[in-house]
Length: 156
Image (cartoon, rainbow, N blue to C red):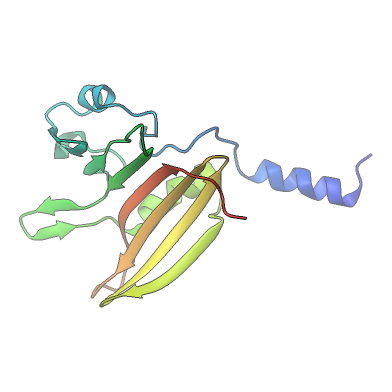
């Protein structure tokens, strides 16, 4: 009925669900200020940046930059301010749900920046790119810093 190549292609397509656009913790490029104010009451808005109230945080997101129609990009920040200083979730706790929804990243890049080892995970959809940035400073575990969803053309 199917040749071997067709059967393999069908199997690969069935491994990851098809999602029309990127979304994380219910936030996407369609997210508006009104959406954020409704979902996160008590959060502080400064221009296009929103500091989320701790009691309303979802998916380890504690801050975000709203998309600008002129340059559609949503940035989600995982840094949580605590009495002991900034705290970040493990990279795996953020990467796991993304991989479950989007499949494996199309690209993983590792690089050093000053005294920090970074790992960047990249996924593509037609017209969109999602990037998870994780880092390892003095700690042994990789920590999630931020996630960016943006409108872009995929490089060839």
